Length: 205
Image (cartoon, rainbow, N blue to C red; front, top):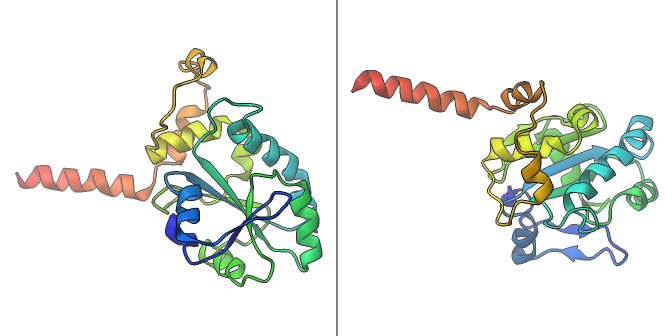
């Protein structure tokens, strides 16, 4: 997943709009994290409606004001705006810890084609190894909120190097009726191929 942005320039959505352009910086902010690619446009009404939901989702997982140990998660805004002014207006509404590609970076178009994004808003979720965990998580984020991250984390087998918060421990055994379905949804073809391989191996022994 880090390879996706190596030799590229990511910009932090803070006041100074600091550029991350060295391999060390890119690796430091993306390695061993679940990555969300947020494709949107400021001219899209659905994108503007979804933005507060995404901001709340992200800050509850990353903002120290809401959580003691920020989750291993990164969010990159891939602008499909028609002008830099439109992109800037949208960035002003996005959380300050979000990363983005500069408007004049043609890689925005390449990423849209790579992940076959046909509509906006779209949130592509990637595992740390770069494989697609969810081709579009917009509906799940709207419906399940932060519970999505737990499902992504388990599917990606992502291990956090932090202590579990008390409230997380208390809610560990609280499962919703739809949770097994969500977990099944995030099971990839790679998992299925692993099972098939073990079956074939077993027959041959």
